[in-house]
Image (cartoon, rainbow, N blue to C red; front, top):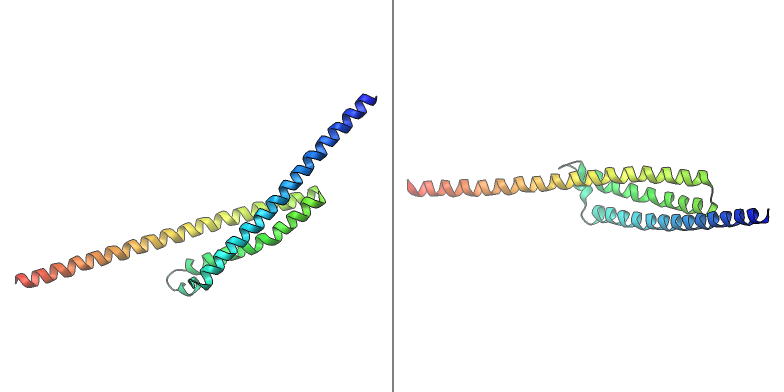
Length: 152
């Protein structure tokens, strides 16, 4: 009976040690989420304050939507990661499940923001390409017109 009891104690100790490692990893993950959300929020504030993208909404709605969306996701990630730290320290499985659900929601929002920013980049590149083509065609047209004027 003593061998079985010591075996159970060793198994429980191993499970608790593993649980402590997982809790420590979750705390590190929450700290990483906080740092990344602060970086994203800083980038959004930079786009809003330095580049003044929100004033270019007359050209496209994406100029206004993308920075505010990035800022909202960054600010929403801070309380979620604080909640994750508290859930990891308390070791309550329902809090950990709630934290996992919140992280999945934030991941979906982050993916949406990434696709929105990519769409914004493609729109800017195609508009720039169209503007360059219009300029090239205008230069060719005017040079042909000038050349035709000199011939006659």
